[in-house]
Amino acid sequence: MEDKKKVIFSGIQPSGNLTIGNYFGALKNWVKLQDKYDCYFCVVDLHAITVRQEPKDLRRRTLEVLAIYLAAGIDPEKNTIFIQSHVPTHSEAAWLLNCFTYVGELERMTQYKSKSKKYGAEGGTVSAGLLNYPVLMAADILLYNTDLVPVGKDQTQHIEITRDIAERFNNAYSPTFTLPEGYIPEDGAKIMDLQDPTKKMSKSSNNPNSYILIMDNPEVIRKKINRCVTDSLGKVRYADDQPGIKNLMNILSAITGMSHETIESKYENKGYAEFKNDTAEAIIKELTPIQNKVNELLGDKKYLEDIYKKGAEKAYYVSNKILRKMQKKIGFIPVSR
Ligand code: TYM
Image 1: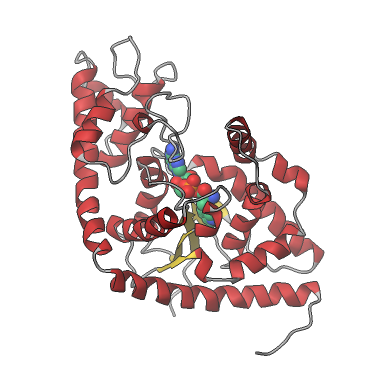
Image 2: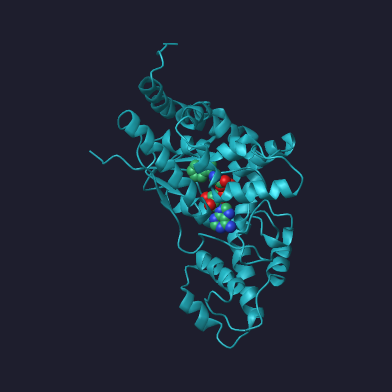
């Protein structure tokens, strides 16, 4: 008999238009891993509402993210693809796990600290959801007995807290959850902001020149790469004192598979213009077929609906078993419905 495949869970928030950071940090690796693992890929809309979303934009983006998953090459026949809010076990398990999580450890999360500071500075208020967000992420992961979580580097702390919460629950009762590991790619782990390459590229940035969207057209991509911040050293080198160039090299490597050394020698004595131009063209070549496919898929809402409905059914079935186990161990009275 074939060995049982290990489980992967990952997700992207439909909180903004997806960037090439999401693509290289997460999606592209999901595509590579899908044959070897039993995969659950989720559009995490419950996570997106930790900050206020315009309802019609949230609806549009949720479907677009789903279409991007498919267009990037995630096979709906092989993987479970679903929308988080369609599977109520996630919210339920998150509540239970909230009671096994300490406020102090949530307050220490880097993402919480930076986001709450940003919203505070913009005059907004910080929702309890923003603080509790890693608990919902832990529920997502633990409900499927996930072995591996393919994400960008910015999510490592959230995977660590997931393990801590899981261990705490396992120790309080008996082994219930698998302890998940992160899977961080080599070259796309942290795609940096094009205007400030010391910061992570983010879909929530206020400056559109700081990111490239998966759906940006070729002209926009050329312009953004052309204007991106580099340095005055004039050498294509993979070095920490050249964060802008290093970032473009990471992107080019993630697309072409070329090593950093190969890129360095290819552009030796050539200046930045040609290197930037080739990087822009490589991005365009990678994204164009995905964009065409996304547009085609968004024209067939019935097809998308069939996929997310089927995905939600399977996800509910699997996750409900673990939720039941949690409830039983905690001491709730079971009810048959
Ligand atoms: P989100 O929506 O911020 O990002 C989705 C994925 O994209 C990666 N990523 C990046 N990778 C490299 N460079 C960047 N500049 C960059 N920006 C984003 C992220 O690391 C992530 O893998 N909490 C998650 C969503 C989530 C989740 C989960 C992930 C909810 N539940 C369960 C895994 C498992 C998030 O906010 O991702």
